[in-house]
Image 1 (cartoon, protein in one colour):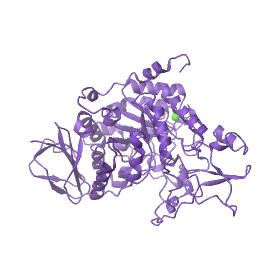
Image 2 (image 1 turned 90 degrees about the vertical axis):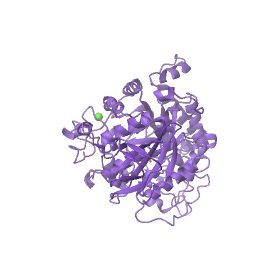
Image 3 (image 1 turned 90 degrees about the horizontal axis):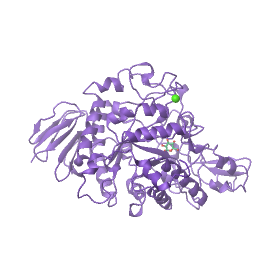
Image 4 (image 1 turned 45 degrees about the horizontal axis):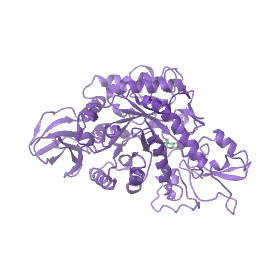
Length: 560
Ligand code: GLC
Ligand code: CA
């Protein structure tokens, strides 16, 4: 963007090309703000290294994403969130950024990015970037300067402490990737803090210079026209000013990652973090009400919802990962939905996530058949859903042999099942070499079942997972009840989870059998099957008893 462009009109121009969803046009009688695009949208997460490679280096790139935009509109999603694409030494695959204002050459160039953005917008797809404010790379010029001398003006942009009296680390804070969160710096004789790898030093968000610089980064991308951000580890941004020790976690077991031995009550989720989040929101608000702020936050519900902020001036969508972390059990999930709905602040909009690049895929957690039920749940619950790339074809985790491990978490805490490579393997497009992902050597192995589990094979099979996703997405798109309608729990027992989604004019019953055995429930009134995971009985009328096969989900329209 050139300096002589009037900033206001260029900001407006940046959003031209978005075809506003037709449903928002017919909105009448809705409360102000309730028609925000992201309330009736579905977000699709792209892990760019693994989506589509176009230059045969085995790593996905921006041009690859452009090549697949038509697929995404055909699928029926509304927005893409792209995991980090900025210059990075790749110690944590892009979550260690050395230049926030440029594209890593492995992914392409700024021109490629502008092209991607324009092509996405031309198709009515919004683009969300991954904003990583908690830490930089240790190769970022700020950190290189900060570690050069104690009196360097950049020093306080990071978190430096003297050793404890015994010479050890200043307190007991642990890295989320295992081991101590403090790294001794020989040259300047102080420790610096890193919540993740030692190559990812934490920024000091109590320093006004950090805030200014990092808000400028938001401006840089907003000026280019991006539609919003997913903010990495939002709850980590501010740490205790007194650097108190975290208390031990009485519930820790060997099955849990080592950093969970302590409760991170002083190293994360500090009250002052909400000021930072609302400042970020303020930056987005300068560009109108349409730029979306999502926060990555792993916290219990009551602390999670605080991230909507005072007077809803925090994140629009604090990511709700409770379907990822919950046991897959109907009563448990039902309780969780109730608690979430009850905890939401007035006007706060819910959201749901089934998988992401950090956690095992849904198909790996519940099995391929049950993953169909999970898809129906994700796309019929009240709230904005986020779909992880590949879940729409039922991709599962792919075992990565120890010699080929790429993920730093697995390298630091090996053999315990925490590694994230298995859920990051290349997208399976077709049955050609490397599933159509790359003509080079893919950076992670391709799933062994890719010849069958791929987009091409599934697109012509009406019973495939992909066809189910498309049906659900298109059904949802046409239904106000399923997007912005009320949620009401319906009594069901054992493995069945059931609820109504309704507006004044539409009422749907959703009944999900979370187990492999047949089950039944009494319906709240006569209804007709309109969609099911098995692709079988659409049209069938149900008078009193709905019979569900094992691993079956049904959407039925209430008729009275
Ligand atoms: C977030 C990212 C994860 C990354 C970590 C550190 O949790 O999702 O992939 O490793 O932050 O940046
Ligand atoms: Ca490439």
